[in-house]
Length: 131
Image (cartoon, rainbow, N blue to C red):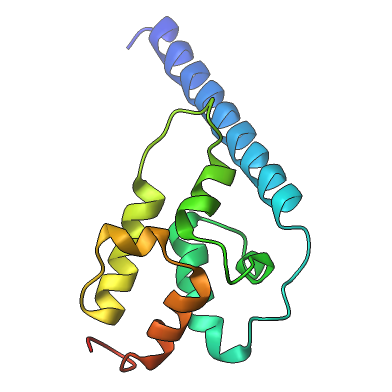
């Protein structure tokens, strides 16, 4: 393989990593600006639900406790991806998948429901499975 091709591949990987890191940093700043402090409404019983939300949205551990229970998953998504961003639905799809595994069925209407309501349904569902 030519040295030029190897250099091109390495440069492309470095630039891609820098762009990814910059984007993740921008999302973290937007999240912290919108939700600056932990919300006392969340209890220890909500830890599994909040952990699933953090995993789906790729948030830092413990940061979902900053969300108000009246916020919806779609509102959080729009904080992370404002109108000038390129949208994808991977976070929302992962979150709906986690809800579906826990609750048995979760349609797109769940994205407009408050997180507090979804957490109550999550707690009421049997531990390892469907309702």
